[in-house]
Length: 407
Ligand code: MLT
Image (tube, rainbow, N blue to C red):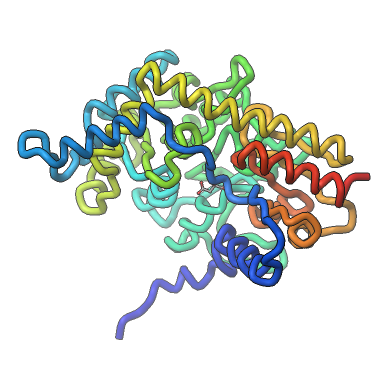
């Protein structure tokens, strides 16, 4: 008789964004007259840029010709893309990351979820609280998270590092030593960023303890403040303790196209084994690479014109972020983030839970956000809005929030 992986049964409810989607669909069915504005899931709304579209077209043409047709992509991804990444995202920033330390994939979400497979189930995991749900969920599915404590809203086998208003929504070094530490900066969901000296402390800690940092840099393109690190490899010694994830979704708008990459430095060795070799092995049997045409589109993002276009997209979304931050403050909310990140983290009105605020915002204003408690126990009392909407919708959402919730 086939047995299921019963670790899946430990996951409470459904995936956060699926639960929200279901609620919104039910609301829309009941109120077809309301134009619902979605500032919930961090999905982009601007179309792909011209340079990217041109690259896609010409790669499609190549695929139709005998001489230029391509079959399976190389395991790590095409060299033209890995070289472009190594140059622009690392060497230009003074980080010594080589193309053979870069693994191209179909997105950071898959890599963030799958990376835990190269580590033993005996490892202790630490996450920020609140946190992007994929890090916890994938460890629960693997059987590394212990039991779900319903009262506390967290898993008994995971170390939660509270990120609270009083510490600028940044985690403190944990008392219990973790083996795997998930960090994400600019942060999803709080929009907080970390300075280089603060990040260096984590790198030093991981090297001293023999831990590995799993660093999600999906939102690095949104950093505006001078001196804030775009990559963990800007810190000394990070190449012996950190793996980094990147996405083309949030900067170049590839959420529907799918492209990302993970950096596993060759110097990163645990249990006498280079992790680069382990992750490469995984690609041989569980290939989640990106198609040739998408990798050509990714290459185009690094061209002179492509970089200008990406900057335009990011600038546009950041204008939304500024509008949201300003609008919320004018409406009497306490809000943060939105300066170096496309997420704004606000306090829900006194006496409401974050899901109650979700319902109230949807019912009274027709606006969708994300309840903070969906990101972990310390997210209760908070709410996330994204800057990825269109300008028109963002302005309209703010107007409705002011009208319905303004003091
Ligand atoms: C989010 O809304 O947190 C993200 O967009 C979800 C994702 O990137 O998978």
